[in-house]
Amino acid sequence: MTTVLADQVAIVTGGGRGIGKAIALRLARDGADVGVMDIDGETAEATAKEIRRMDRRALAAAVDVSDYDSVRHGIAELAAGLGRLDILINNAGVEKRAPFLEIDPADWRRQLDVNLSGTFYCTQLAAREMAKRKYGRVINISSVAGLIGPIDLAAYGAAKAGIVGLTRAASLDLADYGITVNAIAPGPIETELMLGVWTAEALRERPQHGAIARFGTVDEIAHAVVFLASPESGFITGITLPVEGGASAAGAYMVEKYRRRRAAQS
Ligand SMILES: NC(=O)c1ccc[n+]([C@@H]2O[C@H](COP(=O)([O-])OP(=O)(O)OC[C@H]3O[C@@H](n4cnc5c(N)ncnc54)[C@H](O)[C@@H]3O)[C@@H](O)[C@H]2O)c1
Image (cartoon, rainbow, N blue to C red):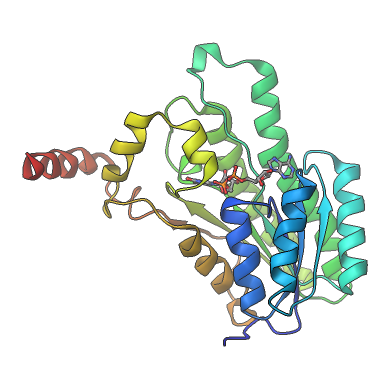
């Protein structure tokens, strides 16, 4: 069993399901004790319970990452309960599709509040804790939608692009405290978020839109998180690592790749 993260303590936001849950379980498998935060306290507790069955310590907290006081209480409670804080994974996110001309300002604000402000609140409060020991790893979950222009996702795309900028800015300031800050930009990963937001047709077509013609898995994102969270990754900071099957590599050439793929299928 690998224990690259032995004796470390991690907090994962949105750890109740999907990618966040897979990350929390993987960090535990690799030796970390884990604080699971989610707006849904019950699912957070269910993930924590699974981790305790792996003989790691785990605590859960019901936290809305878009609420600064909620984050302050949650991080203080988990860091005190687990004794320290080495790793923060900013994974909690929401996505709502709408054509640009029809975006409701309340939906715009919610997506910015949860995805971008939530990442800032958690990072600032966790980094104050990490700075005490002059060591930390912050990993933000952005999206391929933050790297290229997504359709019907202006608020989500803006928030996820904001995370790329926040990652760079925070990496400069926090380097002085031994803290690295990096991001991962997943492509389409099969989770409840994706199944809830996409049409059946999009679910059929979307895997064809990358160099690697399939959806990614939650475990492939968790694998990249462990790489960036590991103590050996101390010379990597401020980057956004795409884990998206080559979705952004081809750019406009993807149209031709897609055409050939369809022709080969017919
Ligand atoms: N699934 C994909 O294809 C995909 C692609 C790129 C990026 N992402 C990003 O990965 C992250 C996880 O996505 P997922 O597919 O697992 O989503 P999901 O909806 O399955 O899980 C998200 C989790 O975050 C929690 N959450 C939502 N709002 C919250 C808040 N305000 N405070 C605390 N917790 C909150 C939810 O309760 C849920 O447990 C998100 O940031 C998402 O934008 C997902």
